[in-house]
Length: 393
Ligand SMILES: NC(=O)c1ccc[n+]([C@@H]2O[C@H](COP(=O)([O-])OP(=O)(O)OC[C@H]3O[C@@H](n4cnc5c(N)ncnc54)[C@H](O)[C@@H]3O)[C@@H](O)[C@H]2O)c1
Figure 1 (cartoon, helix red, strand yellow):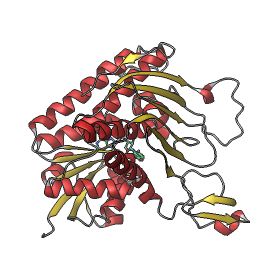
Figure 2: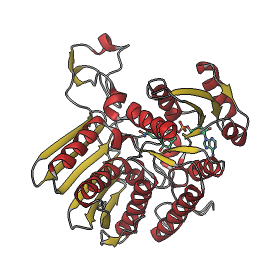
Figure 3: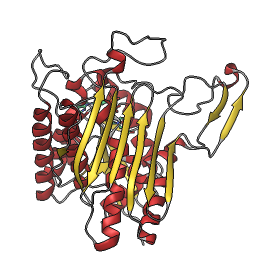
Figure 4: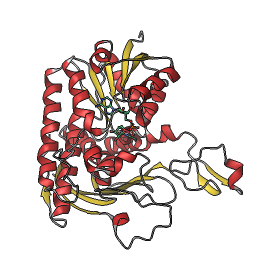
């Protein structure tokens, strides 16, 4: 089969725009012609473009006009605007996580601790519904960039569930490290919430995905979330937090610890932790307890490579693993961190969808269920962990 060429545009020129571009370089199922980048921060976009020999566009509309697919690598506040603009022009939108969010009421007085969380749920779902409506009318589609869905260990687990007809009884998982590097992350008005949405979305969406897979394999009907109970905490904002300098602590109005307990339509369960208080490097894993097998997906770190370094200075120029505090001693150092994390696989899959119409594993409905579960979880946390119904899409 002759490879098709797909024209791509990147929106945003920061952290995620960098790993999207790197993943595009590895696409082998289609030829990708990266036409350029557009970002609100024009200086950052100019530098990003110069570093990669691509064009910096001066408007979103002109970039969209030149491409088939738009990578939405902007902060959550811009996801709906960018994705809807792409869809209205019949283009595909690869949207970073979380799909969308509630950024507050726009007033100076807005504070994440002090508003009714039902507002976040209502407005978050209204945004989701506008995005789904735009997709409905478009020739393009939303491709939800939840890399955990495409992580090789999660895809192997998909295969096990499909081929053995497993019933997944309980999943538990976590995404955690010692604090995001992004200064804007400290504010609900920029992030749409705290660690429960920022990091919790990853293991949650992987768990929602695997239950969909189970139902799809059994009778073609995905098994969806039914209710959620949750707790959130702001441990580093406590007056009695004893700061030793290892954990970021300048959060303005967001949670830094969260626990979501999801009950699915078939009354099986998933428990998802997310936090910004964990030392020892990134801690991303999902364990699956099924009726016929048990799997631990170690996304990052994993033990495919372990290296011992007797002196910090030895590894001054060696990157080991995301967010690790020290390179001395034993380190679980993934030979290819992006690969274990699923970044190249998700981008490969999305280009196959754009070029040849391949089915999408991480689609807008999965993304919508994830947002619905998370903002319902914020409502639950506000009520001290009471069970809250989850609307599904
Ligand atoms: N999947 C992952 O592992 C992962 C990791 C990090 C970030 N992310 C997601 O990526 C997204 C961006 O995060 P980041 O860390 O790259 O942020 P960043 O601050 O590093 O970069 C954001 C970029 O977007 C631009 N921008 C912001 N709003 C815009 C708008 N409305 N229109 C055009 N440009 C706009 C800024 O100018 C900047 O260039 C977030 O949704 C975040 O959750 C995902």
